[in-house]
Image (tube, rainbow over all chains, first blue to last red; front, top):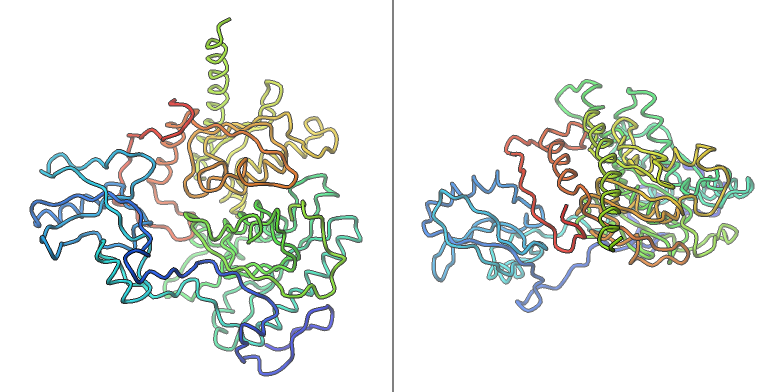
Amino acid sequence: VDNQNQDSGPFSFPNGDPNDIIPDADLPFTRLKLIEDPEEETLESVHTIKAWVVDLPDPKQTIAMLKWLRTSGLDDPSLAHLKRVRKSPVTSTTSLLLSRVTSLSEPPVLPADVPLPAPYTLAVPKTAALTLSSCKVKSTLWPTMYAPRRKGELEEWERGRVRWACAAMNAVVATAREAALKGELPIAAHVPVPYASSKDQAAADHSLTREFTAHDTRTSLAHPLKHAVINVIRAVGDYRAASPSRASELTNQPPTTEIQTETDKTRNGTHYLLTSLTLFTTHEPCIMCSMALLHSRVKEVVYLYAMEKTGGCGGVACLPRLEGVNHRFGIARWRSGGGCEDLRVAEDVDA
Amino acid sequence: MAAHDSEDIEASVHLSWMRRAMQMAEEALAAQEVPVGCVFVRGGRAIAEARNRTNELRNATRHAELEAIDYILSNKDLTPEVTEYPLSDTTLYVTVEPCIMCSSALRQMGIKEVFFGCENDRFGGCGSVLGVNESLPHPKHPAYKATSGYCREEAILILRRFYITENSNAPMPKSKTNRVLKTEIKPRKGSHLSS
């Protein structure tokens, strides 16, 4: 595990037990927090959204209405943190949560064959409760799920993984310098074989078997969109498209008990995604490339230079933080430039 | 000619280009791709038309717009010389609001203007999720205007026809047995056109 060659570049990390957990402050990069943990322990501090609610005159209607709701198309993941039914402890009225109030102000259309009063809007908690006390507070507005934070919590990095990241960063810097020699912008992207610690060795067997590297080619190809990230995603896709047997290589899927045929895997589409893979790049990807990475389900993005005015990973925008997007990836900024000042580009460049 | 007459004529021109984009979306649907189609128009002529090819190319980023842009740039008649903004005299008609990725690509290419059918609440880059076309500042690339509402109902219905079936190409296919095809479409607040 600990045989990464780090000699060939500016970045290194002290050798030692590869399984040592490295404290955050000692990591050679800082990680962006994607989700702020709001303090929502009092009623005033609870963030709310508006939702349509209908009171059920007869609690026996509940099952039929839940069944109807499933087929109504009103199901909305943005309400998944709330329970569907509320029985008021005060009035013992049974109420049903219908849908989120959107830009359309009309209430949802209820089934005509059930006698129901008109729906009304209600402020309900925007997110699940992170603590039990917050759950109690939020549930006074509407019964809320208790979900202590797991997603968004920062993953621990072992020494071996940090040394793997240093090797990847050295590779990306070397490729960027090659690009500069060819007259291209000195921007590169690199997708290494995932780091396999002793504890997830089994998963590694199902993972990517080769690395991919690309640099910017917008100058030589006279194509403003041939950015390093787009080029490396294309390389991964073309590699697998050329050979269906590589279909599952890029995914870190746990072994399944079912026997899947190659066709099934291809049809599943998992092969074209960067699921469980880390992308290293010299410069913070532009909006286009950041969204391409989100579409590709990359696990995390590590970059050397922030692009404050054009970047989509914390610069002018932070795409995995946007509400509504269907995937979030981690973002890490390298702490030191490692003496790579020659790789800087103008601040108005889309990297 | 009265002002509203010329507006009507203009609207019918946009509508006819959008119908052509819809044909590409139909082609995508037939190929079991997410049904999005587009046409790029320059000087009153369609110079490129394309559809989604994400499944075929094993690449989640091969959206219709990027397919067409690659074709335009690789064609020496359409792109005879290297310029900073190769699409500065080109208008895009696309059935669904360009996603954040494509909206950024179009701005980097200096697109003249964009017309789209329906909004994209998950990924839309022309205002729905992020205003990459206009409101998001860029130190260099000029903003472009994006107008919604041409063939909106048709664009939504074809997406519903796709999603009502099991999308076997999705990363985690979901059971859609409870789904029914809804044909009623509610108007969107703030959309520029009703048809």
